Length: 341
Figure 1 (cartoon, rainbow, N blue to C red):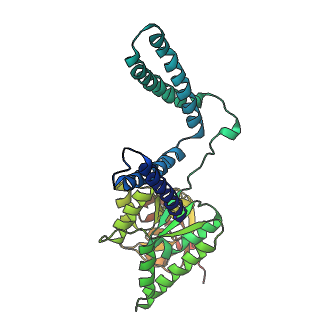
Figure 2: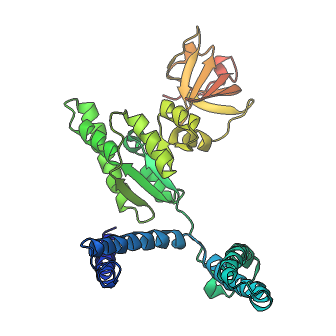
Figure 3: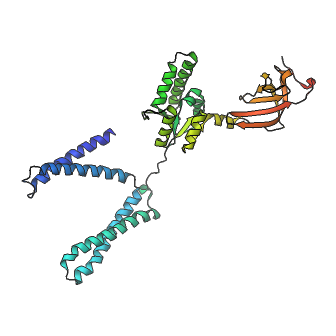
């Protein structure tokens, strides 16, 4: 950005000075006191148009520029040939220049457009090919996914690529939580800052902090607005943010959904060995958990709380909050139970 400003200032100064000198030397305007300043303004206008044209040309493939230029010259040549009979056989000197201008505009435009479009159909040497730039995907991190911490572990596996964007307002929210008088919130905030440091130290990932902000809006609204502006994805654990972002056409990567997808599949009829920890909501139910945190509800298992038992899976319920397995004791008789401890 600074480089463009410096180049623009230098070009503007040169063009303004040149315009001032040129306008001052024109006999028709040299006697006017404002002639030089008008020339300087014209020079600045030329600078602005040149820089704007540069930005446009940079976005056009090289093959299109070459094809358009070649087509333009061919079109101007055809225009010269088309105007030749009028110059040769018609004694209308006042129409020669207007006719040539009209033919040049028509055939030059056709040549420019067709040349630019058709050049893509012609095989060109590799050194004339525009380099294909693949846009690295941008992923905006929200506070919940940073504090959760699993994003750092996933990043270290190499499954995630692209650039992680951390907005300034997210960093400020983490700092606010880390300074909280509540011990639990303070611990969570400091954990989030440590996770950011781990992400920065990961050579496989690129972490960028951006200053973009949306005044007078909540954090979730700011995240959605920033994702729309940057055409980025949102990494979150927040269910409500997930739904709001999806409604606005933003792709959301939810770590909880990833965790659920990575859990081993459990089918009805399979046998599991679990330790019943507590009583369930319905009468007689027992509750256990698998190693990945999946809740297992066992029918008629209240009397076996604290024991390790084998259960048969009867059904699996998948919800937005996770997966829940319903089961029953493999053998209702207490003789079949393997009691440990």
